[in-house]
Image (cartoon, rainbow, N blue to C red):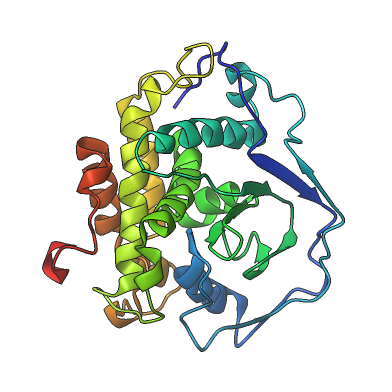
Length: 297
């Protein structure tokens, strides 16, 4: 989606960390290709509730955060800035998401922060890196994103690198925060499988992302200027490509291993696209993934 050039952006919900680096990062348990993809299959665009796949172990040393500055996205003031800079785009989308969900959830409180970082940093849920992908940490209620992940998503998984594909990632993580607020997250265990709680949680976040996209062009700044221009069919296709790229079946196929539904933690590409569309067409009240039978997921 394209931001209106004159919309004003509040960057206070976003912080930027520097000094993490990737010192001493080790992934144990096998070759980088298959093992990393299996790890991504359990954490990619998700909630950090510890990895579901026991064959994957991650040992990370170093990477101490040296500095964090709230609202520190240089040169990010207007929609025109967000249209040209990916970090500013995340800040602008955060502003829009915060305003949207404040109208949808009773007693709403936003995420504590959206943390933009480079390489590696620490969260209350453990280490965060571009390799683990963006995630929401319920322990500190923060969203962690290394924006270089967008290049990985397009280059290695075939997703579009369009602006809405990138904002879908943030909106999905914001959806996990909403699930936390309404109690869906608390009932999720560490099980896997096609009808597991983890799959239902991820599909709910996709649905919530679609609900925001549906209304995003009506969310305004303090002066009444809409953040985003009306969505185009190409932008919807961009978001769909991102949702499809992180389906369990697609990730397993990309890793060169057989598709095993009992290892699913996020849902298939088809499910992820379909639940995004459900939210886009029907709004957040249609996102009851925990209320439907397994055959309806």
